[in-house]
Amino acid sequence: MTAEMSDGQQGAAPRRRRGWWVLGGFLVQAIGAGGVAAFLWLKVRNEDLGGHITTMMVRLAWHSEVHTRQGLAVLIAGAVIYAAGSMVMARPYVTNPATLLVAVPVAAVVGLLLLGVLAIIVALIVFLATMNVDLPGGSGGSGKAKRKPPAAASAVPPGQGQ
Image (cartoon, rainbow, N blue to C red; front, side, top):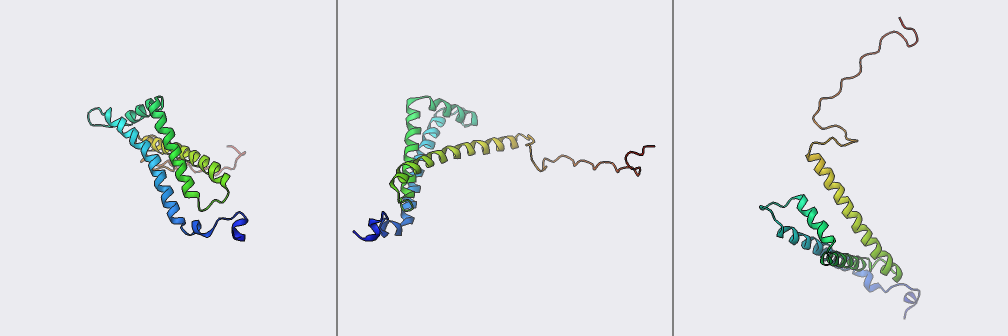
């Protein structure tokens, strides 16, 4: 055993091939997230009404699948596979085993949940924009006429009324 490895540092071999670890981790993450998406897609497609898949159908299928054992098992398995992919991806960068086995999977699942919340927010904004709803804090662009500037102030200074 060399002096470098006895200090708790990893050998050079895993660190030289970082790209393969990242690619492998990404593929495992895609399998985890894609499996859940494919499961939901199959459920929505089976409930197809007249060839149209609406947002209400996706919402109904998602809500109904969260409350079934099969749907919950698919969601949990997808999260576990996604977290495993994150561990594979982080392997060449993390030397502490506790960080790799605890912090990285927790951060991956929290990140996946935040990504889902962000997707819902973006979908809501797009939906509101297509419904021609004025969003707060916007810089205009809704096609309405611009406001007229206020009338010019009179030449009489304040406090000296006529």
